[in-house]
Length: 102
Image 1 (tube, rainbow, N blue to C red):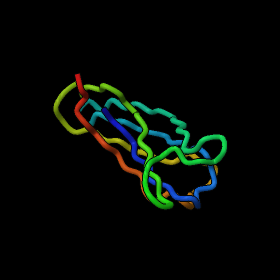
Image 2: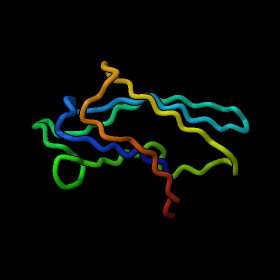
Image 3: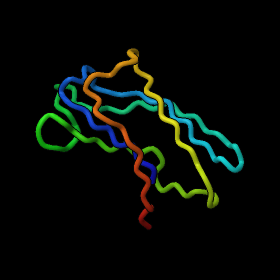
Image 4: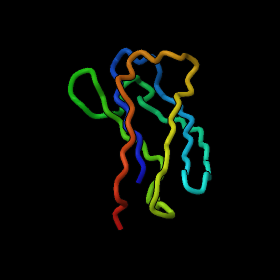
């Protein structure tokens, strides 16, 4: 599984976040580009993530039950695709790779 982890606080002015993802197999040079939209809050403004205090952490599935085709090096490039270059309230974004459970 490939999962994106977003940590935001109350200063984030939007209810969603958009990404452009470039997933590249560095051996074969095969590249896949995806445009993603993830919802961070309910319609009433309540954040969907977990955590204490102002910071909330939300996990978003990118590739569920994904199996890498071969051992080797892969690259995940993540670019935010919101209207503003600066996103106040986004504390950090990470990528989590975990073994899929059978």
